[in-house]
Length: 114
Image 1 (cartoon, rainbow, N blue to C red):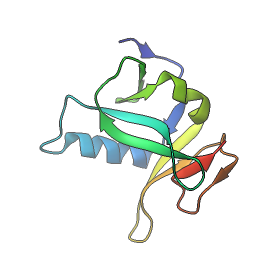
Image 2: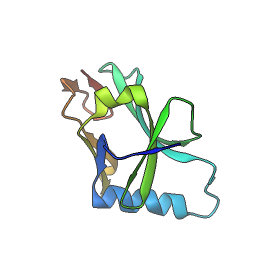
Image 3: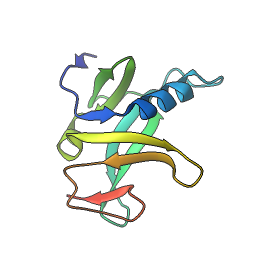
């Protein structure tokens, strides 16, 4: 699989650090790759995917500063220019998505419409 040079999404330093920490943990399944994508559903129409998964035939592989991820080639249109961040606070803990392609988002920030 070829590594693509034009990267559709960006990760903040805190997101990269957290993802690399998760991937270095004992018991991590090294046969899986970080997956970024979308799927139908959620209160706004589409939901973000940030998970670990096996590579599928329609996937493209990307690498940013030592962090590699896979994404279905057809998802780039929805995610181009998106930034993924990690918030480590007590109240707002988790990954957040800033998507310039979203015409609206839900209150929790994990669902969007285009």
